[in-house]
Image (cartoon, rainbow, N blue to C red; front, top):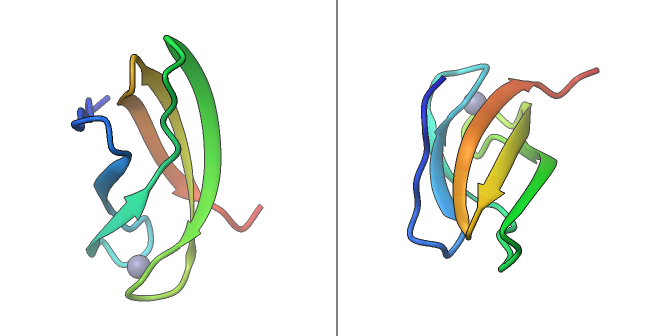
Length: 71
Ligand SMILES: [Zn+2]
């Protein structure tokens, strides 16, 4: 699994599950040492819903998984 590290502001570039175009999303990061979250964010290119499951460790996003959000 790929690791995604950002600088703590929550902005991260992902690749769309549907059209494979990169686009930037903003994910919630908190000052908690560790938490898990999932969000559905529509692609800015093809408008399909990307389900983003991710973990945050000390304000850095890790274990980011993008799947079909149409469930
Ligand atoms: Zn797309």
